Image (spheres, rainbow, N blue to C red):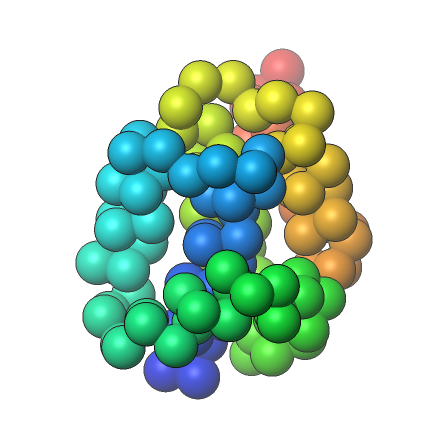
Length: 116
Protein backbone atom coordinates (compact mmCIF):
# COMPACT_ATOMS: atom_id res chain seq x y z
CA UNK A 1 0.00 0.00 0.00
CA UNK A 2 1.30 3.45 -0.82
CA UNK A 3 0.29 7.12 -0.86
CA UNK A 4 -1.57 6.78 -4.19
CA UNK A 5 -4.03 4.47 -2.41
CA UNK A 6 -5.18 7.11 0.08
CA UNK A 7 -7.77 8.89 -2.07
CA UNK A 8 -9.39 5.69 -3.43
CA UNK A 9 -9.53 4.18 0.08
CA UNK A 10 -11.22 7.26 1.50
CA UNK A 11 -13.65 7.46 -1.43
CA UNK A 12 -14.58 3.78 -0.98
CA UNK A 13 -15.20 4.50 2.71
CA UNK A 14 -17.47 7.40 1.77
CA UNK A 15 -19.37 5.25 -0.71
CA UNK A 16 -19.80 2.55 1.93
CA UNK A 17 -21.28 5.09 4.34
CA UNK A 18 -23.82 6.16 1.72
CA UNK A 19 -24.63 2.65 0.50
CA UNK A 20 -27.99 2.62 2.26
CA UNK A 21 -28.91 6.13 1.17
CA UNK A 22 -27.89 7.91 4.36
CA UNK A 23 -24.80 8.50 6.44
CA UNK A 24 -25.22 8.60 10.19
CA UNK A 25 -22.88 9.68 12.95
CA UNK A 26 -21.61 6.14 13.56
CA UNK A 27 -20.69 5.81 9.90
CA UNK A 28 -19.01 9.23 9.95
CA UNK A 29 -16.92 8.16 12.94
CA UNK A 30 -15.92 5.02 11.02
CA UNK A 31 -14.88 7.16 8.02
CA UNK A 32 -12.88 9.38 10.35
CA UNK A 33 -11.10 6.27 11.64
CA UNK A 34 -10.18 5.27 8.08
CA UNK A 35 -8.88 8.78 7.36
CA UNK A 36 -6.89 8.77 10.60
CA UNK A 37 -5.37 5.38 9.77
CA UNK A 38 -4.17 6.25 6.29
CA UNK A 39 -3.56 9.97 6.56
CA UNK A 40 -5.68 12.99 5.93
CA UNK A 41 -5.46 14.30 2.41
CA UNK A 42 -7.93 16.98 1.40
CA UNK A 43 -11.17 15.05 1.16
CA UNK A 44 -13.47 17.92 0.16
CA UNK A 45 -13.17 17.22 -3.57
CA UNK A 46 -13.67 13.49 -2.98
CA UNK A 47 -16.75 14.21 -0.90
CA UNK A 48 -18.19 16.36 -3.70
CA UNK A 49 -17.52 13.65 -6.28
CA UNK A 50 -19.10 10.96 -4.09
CA UNK A 51 -22.11 13.16 -3.41
CA UNK A 52 -22.55 13.82 -7.14
CA UNK A 53 -22.25 10.13 -8.03
CA UNK A 54 -19.17 10.80 -10.15
CA UNK A 55 -17.07 8.03 -8.61
CA UNK A 56 -17.71 4.34 -9.24
CA UNK A 57 -16.54 1.47 -7.07
CA UNK A 58 -14.91 -0.39 -9.96
CA UNK A 59 -12.87 2.68 -10.94
CA UNK A 60 -11.65 3.14 -7.38
CA UNK A 61 -10.80 -0.53 -6.95
CA UNK A 62 -8.76 -0.48 -10.16
CA UNK A 63 -6.66 2.37 -8.75
CA UNK A 64 -5.54 0.41 -5.68
CA UNK A 65 -1.91 -0.63 -5.89
CA UNK A 66 -1.78 -4.04 -4.21
CA UNK A 67 -3.53 -6.72 -2.16
CA UNK A 68 -2.90 -4.90 1.11
CA UNK A 69 -4.71 -1.81 -0.21
CA UNK A 70 -7.56 -3.94 -1.57
CA UNK A 71 -7.95 -5.74 1.78
CA UNK A 72 -7.84 -2.42 3.62
CA UNK A 73 -10.58 -1.09 1.33
CA UNK A 74 -12.82 -4.07 2.00
CA UNK A 75 -12.15 -4.13 5.75
CA UNK A 76 -12.91 -0.41 6.03
CA UNK A 77 -16.11 -0.70 4.00
CA UNK A 78 -17.22 -3.69 6.06
CA UNK A 79 -16.69 -1.78 9.31
CA UNK A 80 -18.51 1.27 7.98
CA UNK A 81 -21.49 -0.74 6.70
CA UNK A 82 -21.82 -2.34 10.14
CA UNK A 83 -21.08 0.82 12.16
CA UNK A 84 -24.74 1.58 12.84
CA UNK A 85 -25.85 -2.01 13.32
CA UNK A 86 -25.93 -5.07 11.11
CA UNK A 87 -25.54 -4.26 7.43
CA UNK A 88 -28.87 -3.97 5.63
CA UNK A 89 -29.67 -5.25 2.14
CA UNK A 90 -28.34 -2.13 0.37
CA UNK A 91 -25.10 -2.24 2.33
CA UNK A 92 -24.68 -5.95 1.66
CA UNK A 93 -25.21 -5.28 -2.05
CA UNK A 94 -22.53 -2.59 -1.92
CA UNK A 95 -20.10 -4.96 -0.18
CA UNK A 96 -20.78 -7.60 -2.82
CA UNK A 97 -20.16 -5.07 -5.60
CA UNK A 98 -16.94 -4.00 -3.88
CA UNK A 99 -15.84 -7.60 -3.40
CA UNK A 100 -16.28 -8.23 -7.12
CA UNK A 101 -14.45 -5.05 -8.08
CA UNK A 102 -11.56 -5.94 -5.78
CA UNK A 103 -11.11 -9.38 -7.23
CA UNK A 104 -13.85 -11.35 -5.56
CA UNK A 105 -11.77 -13.17 -2.96
CA UNK A 106 -12.55 -11.10 0.13
CA UNK A 107 -14.09 -13.25 2.83
CA UNK A 108 -14.34 -11.48 6.19
CA UNK A 109 -15.07 -14.77 7.96
CA UNK A 110 -12.08 -16.66 6.52
CA UNK A 111 -9.92 -16.23 9.68
CA UNK A 112 -12.78 -17.59 11.81
CA UNK A 113 -13.39 -20.54 9.49
CA UNK A 114 -9.69 -21.40 9.50
CA UNK A 115 -9.89 -22.08 13.25
CA UNK A 116 -12.59 -24.75 12.84
